[in-house]
Length: 167
Image (tube, rainbow, N blue to C red; front, top):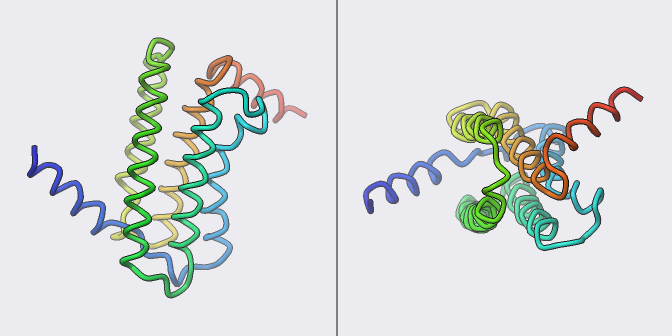
């Protein structure tokens, strides 16, 4: 188990995307991918612990990725912020998952698996723009999964989303 944790830490440290010299437009889109975590607060208002938890996840992620996107950002500071983001997001994500476990369907787990593939594929070994694309898709998919659990569930969210697209 300790070996697994050491390997996981090493993998995350080695694969943290370096986007210092990327185009500012791509950086902005990457940071904006975190705003999906604020949709429940905007749509439902701050009504319970889940919308607040999602907003905290989004805020921590925005702080980390904003620092990551700064030119000449210290790699050590970026790594530290990454671990704060990973710790807070995992802890709060598990909290939501445990409390909403009974309402999860196979489709939720399939979508989460796809999101996890984007997370794993978004590494420093890729071009920085691909890292930002894959990791941004991780934000969007996990944000949709969590916001879909709030209040009325994923089905209503997709119905609202489709109706908005029709107009």
